[in-house]
Length: 172
Image (cartoon, rainbow, N blue to C red; front, side, top):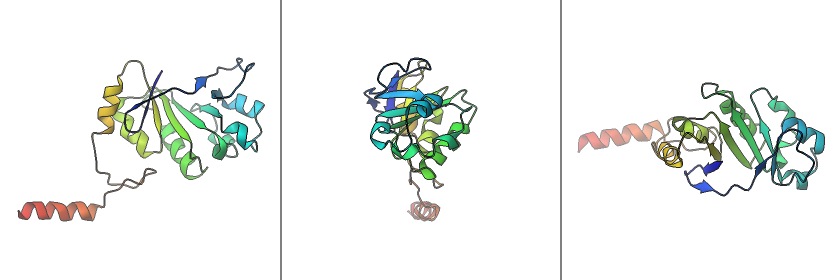
């Protein structure tokens, strides 16, 4: 799996995915299911949790990670299909309400056209689906330099500044 950051640059994959039932070895640098996280880790164990990631699907209750979130190293939100936008809302909740400052990764059925929206909602990395290229995601991330609404990325251009600029340009 290829992972890109919010600039579209390929990141070294430091995390390995652990499926349910594979928990017999070390879970350091592993992305585990919510049930595995709850079974093997105490929410107050900050040092261990910083080396663990959790994978959440749309079926998982995001409220179950509220105590774990500030200490986790990675949270991966899986898009089951590109037209299901629930992981966008979940990302905002995790960043804003749960205080998560680590790597928030989007994976699953994602389109390059969604890349900028992923960043605006707080995702820091994207697992590029095999049918798309890194270049497609990089181009999508660079497509717009102006944002009209506030989001988790704090990248807002004030509409009044944009209007003033348009008037100044028109006067020339």
